[in-house]
Length: 213
Picture 1 (cartoon, one colour):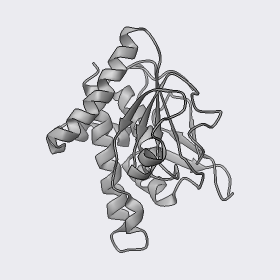
Picture 2 (spheres, helix red, strand yellow; picture 1 turned 45 degrees about the vertical axis):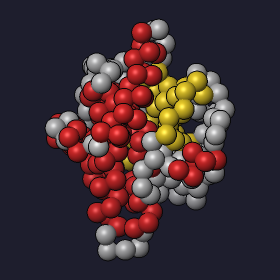
Picture 3 (tube, helix red, strand yellow; picture 1 turned 135 degrees about the vertical axis):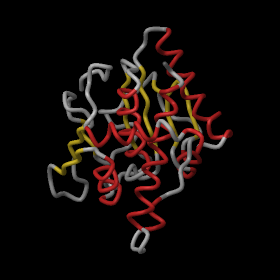
Picture 4 (cartoon, helix red, strand yellow; picture 1 turned 90 degrees about the vertical axis):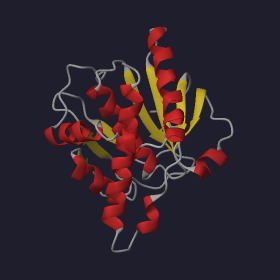
């Protein structure tokens, strides 16, 4: 995919979401900001060394939080014009990119389109009008499409954190757990919870990159 940079133009809905999210950093608890700033420092170190920034977001099933984090982080890098950033996701098991997570991202402003009807469909994701499509599907974090070395591993759930005391090939490891929106599946609050979690992740990914520039 094309290197994200300041010349990319975010889709209108996503631009509006980030404009509002950038005013919401006061919602992030101080302790949480410290964890986010560790990731910012990693990115700045890579930039200073003129190395590409590779972030792999890892959750057990690579179905919800890791995908949302990957896509939000990639778009947030563009929003702040942080170049040479490549975001990935994976799991310790393979399932599927959850449809509720897909719908929440669509509601926020991403274009997410399923390209097949298999049990683990491949989705095309667009976040900027002039950017290459990102391909999203559930996979192991060690999948060949993900970096095998010199990447920052961001653990987005506690179970993946426990399963991966050492993340193969990573040169840094960050704990950034989010409450699983899966807990709301089949309830009247399902859509609300998925949207809320997606917005939380978006604000925090934006905060990370706001500290890089």
